[in-house]
Length: 103
Ligand SMILES: [Zn+2]
Image (tube, rainbow, N blue to C red; front, top):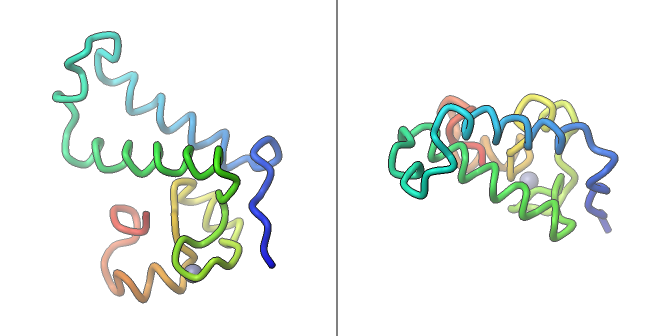
């Protein structure tokens, strides 16, 4: 039985927060309307990041949302917000460029 990774030991989690701020800092996040200024791509990525952070809180970060196996660390380093393992993402979105769809 796979166990989620501890949030304080996984460097990908730090990168999640870095990416979140990288996006948010491009907008006036102190303004309540900033969300409406997000580009589609940034909104999609930010949503994926928020979902990933939620999985960290739930203790399921690093586990594939589809098959439940541990997601490869290299993959999480590349795409810290990835919700699925490589195999499931390939199966779900086969052929489509990874960065926009794996979450
Ligand atoms: Zn999987």
